[in-house]
Amino acid sequence: MAKKFRLVAFLCLLPTSVWANPYPDPNRVPHDPVSSAPLPVDIPLSSVAAIAAGVDIVRTEIEFTEQGERYRLASAVLERSGTQALLARSQKPDPYGSYHAVLKDVDGQIVGYDSIGTGVEFRRLTRALTFRFPVPTKPAELTVTAENPSTGATETVLRASVDPGTLPRVQVDPSTIEVRLLKQATATPELAVNLYAEGYLTSRKEQFWKDANKAVRALVDNHFPGAEHFTIQAVFSPSNKQLGAATNLGQPVPERDSFLGLYYPYWRPFERWYNVVYPTRESRYRKGIGSVPYDYPIAIVDSTRYWGVGNFNELTAIPGSHSSFVYLLLHEFGHYFGLNEEYEGGGPTELQFAPGISEPWSQNITFTPNKNTLKWRRWVAASTPVPTPESHWNGSTYGAYQGGYADSEPRNHSHKPGFDCTMESGRQFCPICKEAIQKKVDFDRGQ
Image (cartoon, rainbow, N blue to C red; front, side):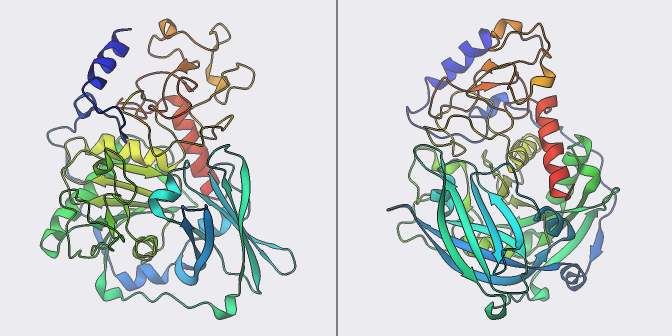
């Protein structure tokens, strides 16, 4: 019980209504080693060659208006940001995600599926949803479903027509970006993991290459599941503004003049809005990361502050110069694969599902702990009771322990596999989270 007592003591110092992502106490998470051996010298690639290797896709942006929960198709464009893995995985629906889309041609043939997001706050923070599909050969209909913000029930929120013959093409000026290959996949099919420079001025370019190499080292040295399939590139384009201190810049939301346009989401007021960053314009963010073909985008932000953000199939962003860079990268990248918070306290999280949802889809939390239906039941010994008292934890006795999900509603319903995982404040992922990431990597490869 000492662990819980220390956490409660810390929380007493916090405001009564805060959001936290990642772990709310930066003093209790792992710090990076003082030094580490340098990676091999990176291999420069020309921007033109990198872009030419991409696949044409349709990128659709769905605008969200909170008043009345309204959705509309804001744009549909052709973009060469696709990969062979994207074409493969788009042919079957993703079992995870809070927002799903399907594109069918006029003959009823499936063009592709896509899904994004985690929880009811996601659309309020981005104010838009993006889905990518293979290019149809004939006019098609886009259908979008979303979780009801109260009940969590899946509802159809949009139907719209997409005519490939009328779509404008996004043009990329290769002279504005520099791409370097940092790691080549050692297994096929490969997945494109891109590290984007966000908020790095021209004078800070060399620092970005160092930070990007550090990210590769973190993923490789920590044996991130599926990393053998990762071809990792660093993508630099200078920003005109650094992130700077969190400031409420007023309404309407001004577009941030940086490569990806990320900033603290003051447009969605909450007490710790200065702990995460989100796109000031979803279109700018998507155009930026789409300047090079991608499967997994990671924004490295030129900042030293303690924060990070990760949302399923949408965004991973971390501060490049924080002393807990490795932990932040692994934790937030874990969210990109669907994992939820395994810590308690710190207020609600933007990964919160609708308060009326019966069972979240996140692979590492449950509201209905039952040994016969538990998502990770194969990791639970027959002698372990479910729900599982904390007294059973010995470092490897996985069960269904009450906790996780921060302070999100409904409170005291969430159960997690164990303690000390990276999705809490540990140095390593637990086997349940490793398996969840690996399954998502396999799905994203089209397996």
